[in-house]
Length: 236
Image (cartoon, rainbow, N blue to C red; front, side):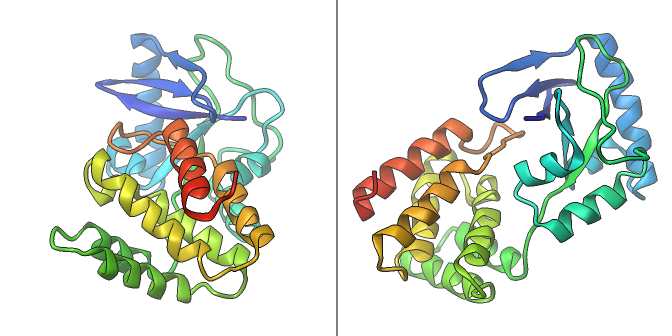
């Protein structure tokens, strides 16, 4: 699985999808990477790397990774993965990306779009409103998921995109109850245990990357999902 680039102070580090490995990069690397990302930002019509990182995630491949596997890891559908590939014009072939090696000054950076499906901004605003109530937040999420009700898979993907915006919900203490509310709105309409377990498994298998230090990390999300599924729905 590809690493995700994280900003740390004035430098960078790489973190794997399972949050088991972190690689700090040297000041020399950080300087070179900053120049590359500033250049990529200008190619995208943005001012600098800071603006770039506010709009996309940066993946750095390991052995065996391709843009197709990276798109899948980040929850992109086939259409969005192809759009991602079209946007990464620095690669002549989506499979010909090179694994990171220690000390590299010019790794293969894959720009991964942060997807917010239809209705997500309005739902986020309702969730993070200081005067919001549990019922008000759940109604906003219900309206949002109702716009993506073509299938259970579509609703789950939409919920994942909303949950991935958890840093916007407030402090870490506020994020947990709001994430559980989203889970409830997603899961409760499905009465069968198998259907509910399929949804919970999809949430647990998602790579909950966090690059800002302000949101519950991947391990925390896995624990929250498992514990709430067990307590609220009796799913182990």
